[in-house]
Structure formats: C-alpha cells, structure tokens
Image (cartoon, rainbow, N blue to C red; front, side, top):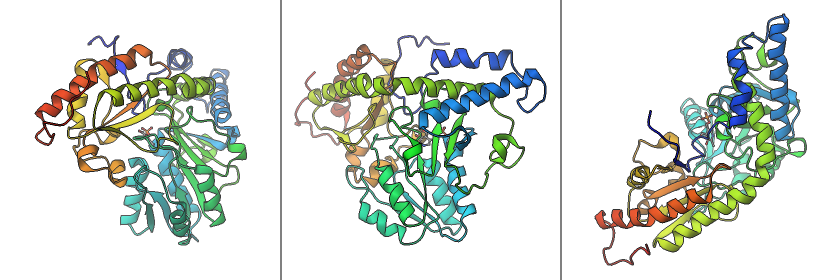
Length: 396
Ligand code: PLP
C-alpha cells in the first residue's frame, strides 16, 4: 500500500475519515458482540441496547425523538425512502416539487419518477444558486404530495432557507423532506421546533463509515416503507441491522454535536484563509455560490479557461485531494448540473474545483494549497488554447 500519511485531504463533502473514537466504539461489535439484536438471549441484548443508544445519539444531534429515527444503508436510501413514502402514503396529492441542484440521490430518482408519469417540478436557481420564493409558492399550487429540497448543496455549500420552505409546503398541504446529508454536524438543528417532516443524513459525511445513514420522520407522519421485510426499525425498514455501523453513526453524531462550534469557528476560518489566499494570487478566479448562506467547510472556485480535472491531477502530484464538482459525477467531463443550473459560463464551470474541509485540517494543509496551486493554474493556462496569453499573470 502507498503511504498517504502526509495527505492533504480537502474532499470532505465526498467522504470523511472515520474518527478514531468512532472506530474504537464500533470494533467490539464486529469482533466480539456479533449477536443478532432480534434474538432473545443476553448476548444479543447487549447489541440491542447499543443500537438503542446509537438511535438516542442520532436523535439528540437532530433535536428529535429516538422513535423518529430510522436507520438506513446510506443517504441515497434515506432520500429514496422519504420521497417514495410521501407519494405512496398520500395518493390524493400529485407529485413532487424539487430543485435543479439536488444530489443525484434526489435528482435522478425524481427524473425516474417523472419518466413514469409522476408530475415533478424542478425549481430553477439564480446565478448564486438561490431559490426564488415566489416561484416556490407558484409550484406548490399544483398540490404536490411532497417537496424535497436539500438543506445545503454538496458542490457549492449554498444553504437553502429550509424552515421557510417547510412552512410554505405545509401551508400548501404538502409534506417537506430535506436532504441534509451535507449539513448534519455543520449546522445546528432542532427538529422539535422545526416544520421539516423528513430529513436524510449519511454516516460517511460526518466521520462514520460508508454504508450507513438515517432518515428522520416526524412523529405522526404517514409512512410507507421502502425496504419491506422483517420487523426491524419497527417495521419501517426491514433487514438485519448493520450493527457496528449503527454504533459508529451514533458515536459520530455525539462527536458532531461537540464539534459544531469548531466547524463554524476554526474550520470556517481555514476555509476563508484558503479562499482569500487563492483569490489574491490567481487572476480570473471566482467563488461559485451564495457567499452569505453557505456551509462553513466548503468553497467552490472557478478558475477560468482550464479543466478542473487537470487541476486535480496536478494537485494529486502533491498529495492534495479536492474535487471538481460532485464526487458522484467525476469521471465524466460534463460540467456539473449544479453549476449549469446556476448559469455559470462553460469556461468557468469546467475549471471549477471544490475544496471541502473538516475538523482534521490544519493551517499547514491550507498553506500548501496556497503555495502550490497558483503555479499549477499558471502552467495549465499557458497550455490552454482558450487562455488569452496576454492576460494578467499569476502572482506566484
Ligand atoms: N445527498 C447529498 C447532498 C450528498 O452529498 C450525498 C453524497 O455525496 C448523498 C445524498 C448520497 O449519500 P450516500 O453516499 O450516503 O448515499
């Protein structure tokens, strides 16, 4: 295996490192306590009690009741479950309202539903990635069963006013689901005073392992299960529990509750230092998204006239990890659907790089990017047939 000990990892919206405390807590449930939580003996009871504790920890982070938490296999499953459940359990209403900038977990499901005849309204965004609330109100006139609108965008970090949107959905008689995969643990939330009906989260975005998630469903909300099988999750999601991962998610939520202040203080300051350092040194570079309402850990920067993929490859030479748009769309050279929906010009959308930080990043990480990236951009622009060669030079 290659040595990645000096890695500079700035791709935390793609996935995060499992926190050491989380790993520690989950290991006994892989190694020692392997009982099926549904069994009757004490050996299984230990496991069942730990799942109860994990559920309480997830609920505490959200300000929810433990019985409002359904464990799932990932954020994608949570999103699919929420939207399908709303459609199944409210047949008297028609369709879904969503946005053009959702993660594929919502966007592709909605496109699939639309191709099978479900009315779906995809709301546009402006050049900063913001919704127009008049257009939202207009879309609700079609009496949708559910509005599914993300809390924070995975590519730009732009945060939508979900409480206001949830209120509007209710006034129009629709349920409100939000994909909060990118903001759980970064933004404080309290479901006990919120209008949100359903909320998705994913373990691997908050220092738990991949392959575990949860769906919050407000008490009293009509619910139709997606995974039908055993009695697990009180009949709301069949399948023997992924015990060690549920334990991990619980611990990660406990840590996240403690780290929110750190995210909004130190992590946001590091992100701002990175952004300032790059914008000062690199001409024709611009931040994508809403500078006022965004996640504390994310910046998406467009470097004009070059390919984001080439930037990533050259950063990779310095063991710096970032992303050009959503991880799920990398591998394709199409500009991201989010930047396209914002009307970011083709020449900027192609050269956009997302840096997403975590509590594990240091000033050294940031300063290394500020040191290396200007020269990388200058080199790529020299090679670019689109870069006006007499344009102002990069300040090295
Ligand atoms: N929603 C958003 C906003 C995401 O960023 C992601 C993952 O990148 C998902 C949903 C999907 O989560 P998972 O990878 O757990 O299926």
